[in-house]
Length: 123
Image (cartoon, rainbow, N blue to C red; front, side, top):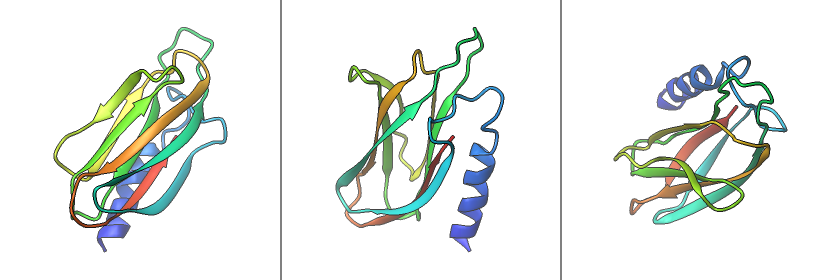
C-alpha cells in the first residue's frame, strides 16, 4: 500500500512536466530501484534549458520505503552543485533552473545500514 501511495505522490509531484518545467531531453521517467546500504547510485540526465526568459524548473524526486535516510545531490556539467536535499528522510525532491541545456549528474545516497527500495522520477 505504501508503494501505491508513494507512486501517487511522485506522479503528482512530477505530473506538471508541461509549462514552467524544464523537461529532460528524453522526457519524464519513473522507475523503482534498490539503493544498497551505505552506497549511492548515479544518474546522468540531460535537461533542456528554456530559450525564453521564463524560469523553467528541472525536478528529480525520490520516495523511499521508510527504512533509511536518503540524500539527493545534483551537479552540472562543470561539477558545480546546483541542488540538494539532505534532510533526514527518505523523501527527497530537488528543483533547479538549468542555465543551459546540459547533462546533469544526480547522486542518490543511502546513508543507512540497510537497503532502501526507492521510487524515482524526473520531469
